[in-house]
Amino acid sequence: MIEAIKGALLLTGSLFMLLAAVGLLRLPDLLTRMHATTKAAALGVILIMLAAAMHFAEVGVVARSFAIIVFILMTAPVAAHVIGRAGYFVGSRLWSGTVKDELRPNYDPLTHELKSGLETQENAKRQPRATDPD
Amino acid sequence: MDTVLLISQVIMGLALILAFVRVVRGPSLPDRVVALELFSTTVVGLVGVYAIQSGVASFLDAAIVIALMGFLAAIGFARFLERGGPRDD
Image (cartoon, rainbow over all chains, first blue to last red; front, side, top):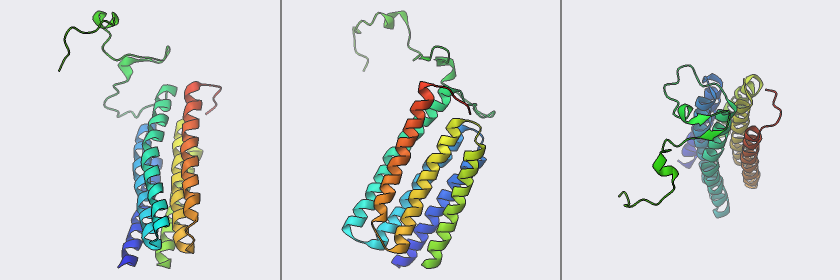
């Protein structure tokens, strides 16, 4: 029983990694490629580490494999965010079928300034509000 | 079980090859950084499978170190990209 579960976890984990690589190869621009790699590869590592934990079934090994899982879950989104931000600022082309780019009207690539959309005369005075909005 | 281990290793090797194609072809530097990050994640999975295959649990420590290195490399490349410097994609 354990053997069957282990085999299924290993196969699905490696297939998710292959799926991430195929997505990296086939998708059209940087952001869609990151969308494929971060999630699918993290899920693949999680499944393989679960298989390793079930194979050894000792406290130390299970703790280590869960440490790897938590580490991957914490670092993959941070790395994807940082690379995506750097890629946008460097000026990587978006896909021609992109529907919405909400950063474009608010970001000035020459001065590297980002507007929040709340630049009114009243906000520029930096006075505290009279009443708090609930 | 040995067959399953071999099959998953072959599948992950294929994933490494596909990621390497993106490293070579990638039109810009951020694409290559993403491909290298997928590389390190796949190697973590391969090390996990090898730990099962060989029965040596200490390989998982190596997997932790590889994951850490991949994360730090991604952060460093992103800082390098944003802070500028001469670039030649």
